[in-house]
Length: 322
Image 1 (cartoon, helix red, strand yellow):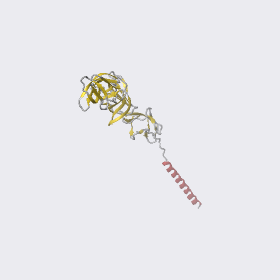
Image 2 (cartoon, helix red, strand yellow; image 1 turned 135 degrees about the horizontal axis):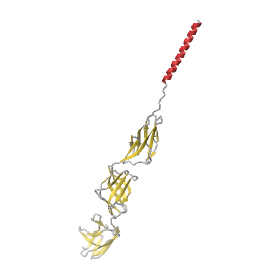
Image 3 (cartoon, one colour; image 1 turned 120 degrees about the vertical axis):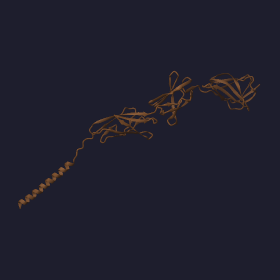
Image 4 (tube, rainbow, N blue to C red; image 1 turned 180 degrees about the vertical axis):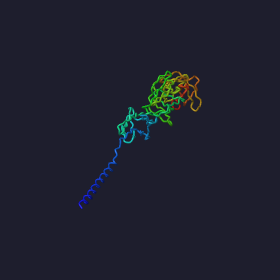
């Protein structure tokens, strides 16, 4: 009886021990130690521009090449969104603002501690500049000048500049006041006419990484056009006498003319003299008598063409007596 009890107890203990060992062995067999991830790849790099467009970079051979659209100004800082291999980390971290002018490298570190460096390059994806120099652009000294037909220029004063180039190759920088969009990628430069000698100039435009100089000297810098102070009362003179009109910038003045009230024929006035602030005309001996409702001064423009200007709107403006 005692032996039977002992055998039974021994069997139970042995079974319990074996069960415990089996459980422990099973538990041990399920535990796995994961090796550190060795991957350290920069997978994606993108930037959201001010306009809301997403700019995706190309990544290859340790370089991050971000092709920036030429028609969007490059900001001082960007905030890239970056993804890397699983379990890896990156510095600067995704969402960290960086200065565009700085030379920035991104370092990706794997769990194993192995690193890979990626250098950021920003390239403005800009076509070659074009200037349409087929039509003369005329700018008066002391006034503003609008030059159209500039294609693929970046409308940003920080990266775009313009110069007038003389026949001797002397460059004079222009002050650009702004840009007017004329069409798809086509702009006019709004600028102050530089203080240079009158004459014909080529236009040189520098915009980001591109530079172009016009084939023709199509920018014409001229003196300010003559202007006349309108008479407030009729000018009364006799044949052979003179009268003077005041004004400004009176260069290249020519013979004037007048038209009788109710008539269609103009009669020439002899040019006596002129300076920058006045012009004097002489009444010819055979000039028709009467009241004249139109009086014109005249000057020769930069193209050699005679241009007439009306001097006053009163009627009569000129009275010729005996």
